[in-house]
Image (cartoon, rainbow over all chains, first blue to last red; front, top):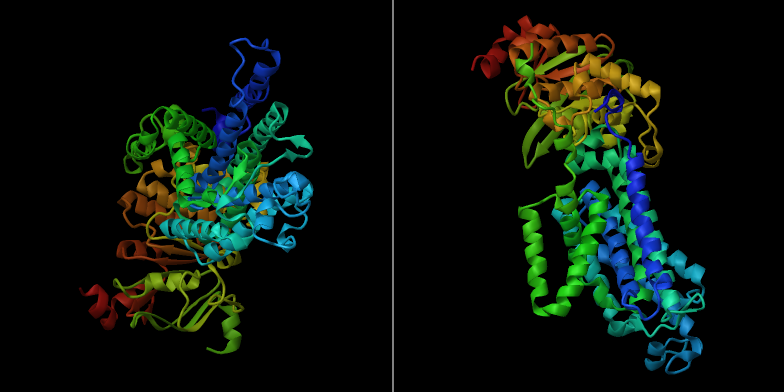
Length: 381
Length: 251
């Protein structure tokens, strides 16, 4: 703890050891994994199976979703149990684009209407589907739809000072309401079947290994950028205001900061991150349907974050990847045990290591900074 | 009180009434604090001292009455953040520092800087702001603890940090709710000195139970009882007032 450290009251968030860690992880994900496919001799045992790339891509999308929840929950104390809704909305925007790309290759070969609309005897495309044949429009909607919903929802909730468990309940209600709405056929989003049978994205066949690798790399880049932006926010003065309002909201108001605006900003930003995660997820798993809105999904995200370490951005990523890898393995090996394991994991995390995996590895700020032997003020000479 | 005099007072409360489920926490309270004044407010529990501060800082909306700052700003219409930005700072009864932030960071958030969300996202800590923080740390005697989380401080140190947080912002009016509650005698003496020092260039209203402390401040005293002013004057004057003795001091 040097004097420069004492003068600033904290370490810089952008120190060399951080960049070394970040770039190493980035290189492993972005270069080493593709290299396994490109440079190992064909038919050798070292070639990983084809399904590995989209599987890892899916984990990275989950990691971005977990990151978005950790930003608002770990730092601003907003436990959203509806984060999956923003993820699903981003996914639906991408799904609509992918449906429009099918064109005449659908079962009914209608050049404009997706199969499910023809099946329901719809005559023309609903207005909210306009523009989704263009990737740029769909990409803009991936950001705007979750962003605007979060802005309106957050404004209503934070302005009325809805906090804690009440906020969690209304976010849960929001995602549940959206799920029920999207299950309806007349909503125009494919009802309970959702949207699937995609053909290509930006002219590339979604089933080709090269396209899958491209989508995987896009997920790596999105996660990397999302992580850097979250780190920028949490290490800024705004980040300290978020930590402050997590612990004593009214005190922040008396200091003259708008708690509503600060929360609204991170809530909206986090919804956009979740939307982007959903948009990258859909072409890699090949389907989007209303079950993505189910409240259980959003609760699972909170479990990933707490297992990895709430309030540590890297913890959210680690938690999402580890829990999902465990889920993939266990649902194959012993499917009936998975929910028990997930529940046990959550109970264990809460009771035994409340600061999660990364929290265990990294001493908490207050432990690291604690003086060797604090002298109570009253006893000082 | 006529309108011309109203504009001269820094804080002007007139006929303020606040009731909670029929209980009148403030009952037609009228109070005037002049610019540069140091005022102590005493009164038995439930006299309305904290509610009065809640009204001034925008936490509670009065049912009726006027609350003006500098004679123009209507405190009954502004929210907490807007009132804070007018230059009214408040210290709570329980020390309310941000426990997970360092002492330094607590002061940094209290600096009189931009308060916009977007502005704070890109705010940089300039050298003159760092110097200001260092000067404040020295004044409240917490230079050594700069990098420690505020949660690890002793009770008295937290109280000082909170005063430092008000100090660094250069507020016009400070409201201190029981600033020496839970302090040792020595800490209490030091706090009295600090408040007298602060009072040289700002207006301070202190709510306190500790009569020795009130006496050491030597300021004008207002006695509240059942939500309105019972007596006002020097400490000797109010201590000899039979009504005050009956409701408060005599018990």
